[in-house]
Length: 459
Ligand code: ARG
Image (tube, rainbow, N blue to C red; front, side, top):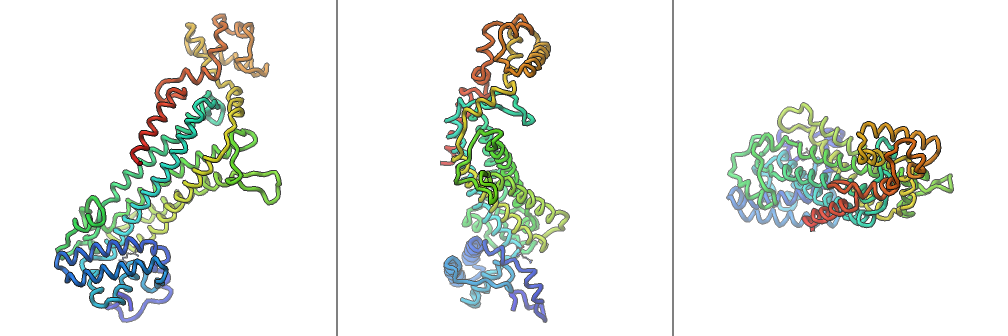
């Protein structure tokens, strides 16, 4: 018989059991469910709501059940619907009437809200750790490549010379904000809903604060209706994860491009590439592509959660059971992507000379050439036009700006002198951009130092 079977005269149809049941995917909440129940039972005992001996027996038995679940010696039942009722049923089968007292002053509605918050709080910690590992790698690569010149792009057209370090540190900033977003999300998640009951609280004198302290929550929910019907903590997390995946997918896209023969900026390690079943020459950047591809799953989960919650009247509705597969999948996805991405990036070989050659082409120093004339007293707009013509000339002559002779230079302006060559070298273009946030080795070094300082918070 169902734990809620008293009001019913007939059992549920088998198809409804299968349809309604969430045990298939919510069994992963077993630990949080048991920990939450232990805290609840302890509190019931301390407050004199149930006898202390019963509370003690419940807690002891729940720990044994936890042990058995972890040993794999428990088979959950579809008929018992979800993890909450499965655990409660096992408890009752072991200790009878004492076990039947556990659910006093509690509903599955506040119980599931509790379990999910507890579970996701742990997951946030793990995701943060993975982002930090990735950031460490980015700092190492950046330190090594402070002087590795490459083209920076806009519109995927070569634009201005930068360094690989500067490029890597751009991603460092993105992941730093991602960590910040996860921490913000955590703060709002870190609120304890037990005591909300089914929706309207309970008349038992529960000590909600005790339960919150016992379970490591920093606050208790303020409104029982909100306590059971809020899922924005999961939506917010799905949104944080979507942004992480978006960042990873941009990074992956670049690594895919960079490992193409056309770019050849990097070579993926064999261990992170795959071959083709037909084309013997192929070495494909599958890992980067798959991370890029999995981004869609994260967005999908976010939209699933938003749509599931859209227009739901207060408070709990069974629709909300659908939150779990979506949020679990998105958490699993990003946790699968981050470590493999980090390893792949760390093992990629950097081809400095290809990067340098690419920066030499594409007139990446044209802006600096225009700035050169500005320094000689020509207004920027006029100088821009002069250099535009110079670039066109170079294209026709198949030359880089730095390859022009002084005679050729002077056809465009008599203000150009011998010092031009040193002023428009790629090294100079980079090193002169030493303002905060710029690509010069000096400023990137400062940014790396700040990066290490940031990571110290997580030692
Ligand atoms: N398995 C349910 C869920 O995940 C638990 C809450 C059920 N509450 C209810 N009133 N049916 O949402």
